[in-house]
Length: 159
Image (cartoon, rainbow, N blue to C red; front, top):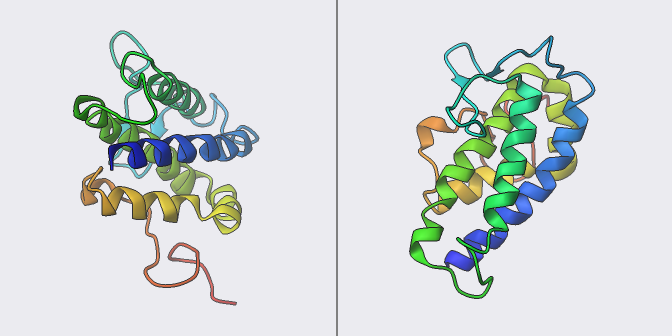
């Protein structure tokens, strides 16, 4: 099961780069000076020696780069066939950080988020994944994904 979680997280991170590319068009360091979702959520970037605030697009790049480095690390993941439980334990932290990219996009760049989500269902799939395998607390899942069949997030019309 650890290998399965690991491989899926690798795939999610690769696909999430597509959202990051789209965000670059309007998520600029001068307009999104902090990585935020709602007013109560400001995220510190773990890519620095001491975690600190970063512009949202930099946080996004740093998070995806850090996830790629960790998931491709020979130290933590020397084999893609079997994975130590101590390495599997690191996946939750990656999930939490990566999810923040979805949160920021949803709350601050909704049209970009919606276009991307309607094409890929990535946030829906990621949310299902982290929920099924208890990789994140439900309290941190703040993008309102609709239950049931079909794609989309709440707030969309059914037209």
